[in-house]
Image (cartoon, rainbow, N blue to C red; front, side):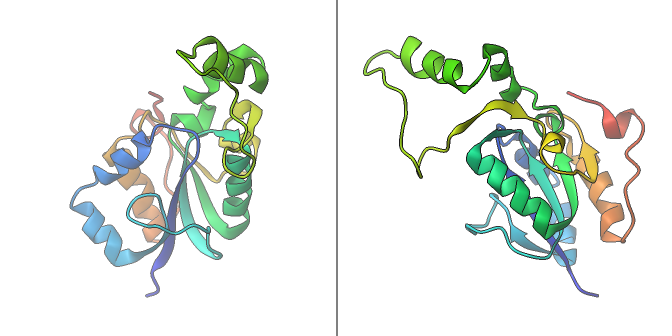
Length: 182
């Protein structure tokens, strides 16, 4: 049987979902026997999202131009896309900056008003990605196939989501154990 081409991606979030993924502990050995990890911030140093990905877990909201571009690449190149954690599902904590009313007030607050010294706005095109006016949940940017809430989703929920996919089935995302936020 061919291995599933598996990826994870990290947009605007804290990496807690990826840390929870690592909490799968010894089940990761079983997973490694059934998947080929083709892209991930955990254990890979790949710079380009590949073609023909079967399953991708996407952590974080869409907060800047780099996130937006990567989200579109992931959707175009992935069969089953999973919105992984509350930041991807709702924009959660990164989305709190939306209350300031756009990217300019966010940058001014962070880099001018709260600066200890040397206050200046960051401007390095090609190095510092431009902020979007709002942090968006993943589904407001691209179609999502499966929503896995949690901050972060615990290892049991991650495993219960992935196991059916490894068998070629869709997971049942129902009940408190699978869809509880927070």
